[in-house]
Length: 407
Length: 140
Image (cartoon, rainbow over all chains, first blue to last red; front, top):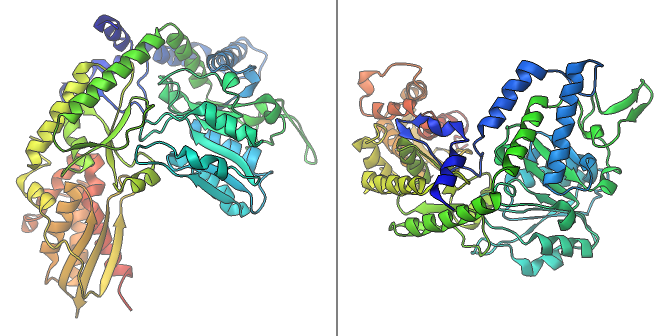
């Protein structure tokens, strides 16, 4: 991929025009949040200036337009992830709320004492805590697939961990702390071979590749808009239609009902039954614009470019004495956790920031992973399609500067 | 280089003083920063309201380590009342709520952290642990 194409993509993201501590921004924390294109920001501005009205209510033009745009995004995202029908896509606050919705609307009525929920050691806290809460309350067991030193799942034990008591298998597609890409095809097949529904935490998926939920045949899939160049505070939960129809509401409120009296309530149709109250309309509309933006990019080539840049970054980082990578998965996204001998990750982060480099430091909401590798925190570099070799050079430069401060 | 990393911080951050488990102690508390995973255990041996000995164990960044190290030096052989006064002072000066008092020149270096909001918790962690130990964690 030519440097010009990457530059033209980078130019679509206005934040890179800003200076951080007087330096150009090298943003390497894309696993936490991705930057947003101009078209997304203009869409928000346009919505509030020209469209702002509530959806599914009001027989006036603005409300009709807002509804059309809001539902238009549902169609766009359902096509983007390969859902059979837009009604299988529920707008939520993010991946976290998507998982909580499944926990409460699907699993809660089905989980009996002694039943099991299977997750893995590499989950983000958002795919641990909701299950922990429910299992504890209903006296069920939370079982955990171990990981290996490579940062990969221990696939050998998965068949025996899926038992006749397992009511749900919830697992991440890509580890947010290690970058490990899990074998979804295998995981979904083995789960279904035992008639166990499976939830995929797709928070890191769509900034790293493409997804087709129908082909994958997963039962639940959840994503966050802010990790795929869209607005924050918004996500989507995909649920297979035949499962969705059997689920009970998660939250009560306006728009999720058809009829209300004090003795009886009739729920609205899916997916509205799960979208109580006024949704994040402007964000949903702007997310639709973001999807259009992504569809106009040559994402396939850009993802390939990102992979090459990642390989370059790894080779440059390994040249620095004292740098140690955490995990070495064969299949990985462009996310790398590393430590620097003798210097705490937070100090690396502060010094990198001084040179305009934004890297994440800490436990990355994955404390079990940190415990497994015997560290309390790491430096995490996560790349996106707008990163350049210069960003990598600045990271390497700031790490060398950090070493000069401490040694 | 960055004003945060003054020589004194680097010195105490890399080679912290009094970093060991105190064999004989009357008060102890754990401090944990859930944002970053830094964790400390503080030990105090208090006799007749005087901190006769003080040490800590744990892991953390150079700022939290230097803060703990400098704290142990500043509180040894001081009264519990003085320790509470120092807790109030350090909490406020690190957050930038009050101006530096020159009589505490030896640990005022930590107050540079106020210009690095994401690091304030690193510097205050051990001081909150101290407060916790003095208030609630006396051995019965």
